[in-house]
Length: 214
Image (cartoon, rainbow, N blue to C red; front, top):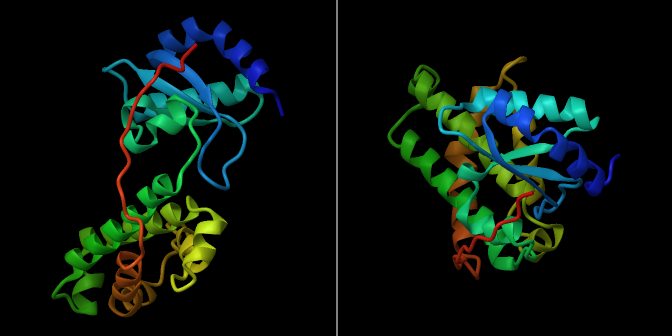
């Protein structure tokens, strides 16, 4: 695996080409602040005429040139709460982790709102609601993976490790058991949301920004 210094050197030489091919206007590297993520990530600004396929193509382009995969994050899409961690290299605090905990609560609340008053038969025949719920369940799992083991151990009443496995339980290729999804929505998610809402320390963080581009 290449060092950060080596990657910077390679990408500096490619700046003009990336600007022409993918509309890159700024590009920098950062060490991911989220627990469980390793390596180096790229933070990128794109010109206004570009789309997500340009971002995906840039990811493959960098992977080919560097010889390893880098997660690409769009500056415009970057969470305000995480800007101090990424743009200023500040340490991730307990409050930063609570960002993801709040997002889990919001995702569960959205699922409850979408399914309110529904029966199972209505749910499985409502394609938009099914797809929205599946997407939100994946988000719940991904947000859970952003929490540290220390945080999870502090609140054992929440089934964190099961939540982190949720994205792998939904398979567009093989199919997903909607009865299991519905039972989760009806029987488990409300109590999980209440447990999360009862946890202490749900404070927001103030975002700041500092240039970290080369």
